[in-house]
Image 1 (cartoon, rainbow, N blue to C red):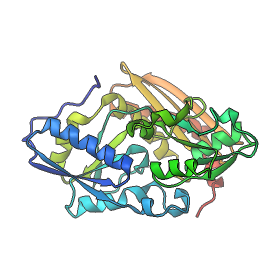
Image 2 (cartoon, helix red, strand yellow):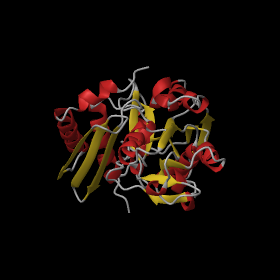
Image 3 (cartoon, rainbow, N blue to C red):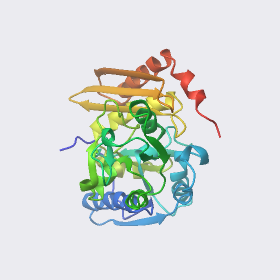
Image 4 (cartoon, rainbow, N blue to C red):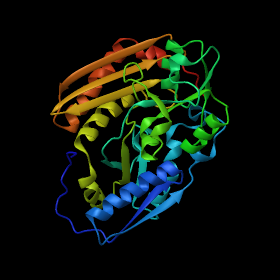
Length: 322
């Protein structure tokens, strides 16, 4: 069983509205949170407000060219501000590293598989792809590693929700695509995964595989109601990861990876910053006892400083600015 943070005594909610993107995966996540809340508070009326974000609408450009990860959360935050929703459910890797004023990342739920997944109809692994094969990915982080290891492959952008991306693969637009394993597993599509990419060298993005719940800072009661859903191992791990990303300006414009594992009061974290062509990389890892969010963030800060000492800041300005 996951270790959780206990909520202080508080009257139960009578009604909660969850803001969510309308993609199939996002709705699965919102429904999962709804069901968890219904188990905690059986008398509570939990509703889902489905929304389309700009990130869902703009599919012909890379995220780094149209505003980054925040495009997936802004409309949901507006729904919180104007009272249409009480909480918003996000894939944590889509949540900007610095929360806007007035908003809190109030809950981090137990993480699914954080690895990247290789999906192809004709090939068993990246190593099996022939010269000139087209690989689709939306991530500069994934692109940098693949370009370094397999320079003979062609990397093309891949946008859209999970079903859209799978459809593009099935129509033959790509010979393979790289996706987060968590989304495929959550939607019952694990059979489409031909290979799981190892954490070394395919280190995931900060927060990958975890669900985050956002609320207004002005509503501490909602944060307390969500407290039993917090998962300590995931919360500590992503706190360290997000600190690394925050210190290095983590966004869709930076090929940055950060993955931590917390177990029995001890944490190990691995992170890298790379050039998009994969020719330059700064890699750092560290381990330490961790028994609080502050200690997790301190370890993340230590790893971020290691990367900066190696020259990571010199890689970041080389990424084209829009």
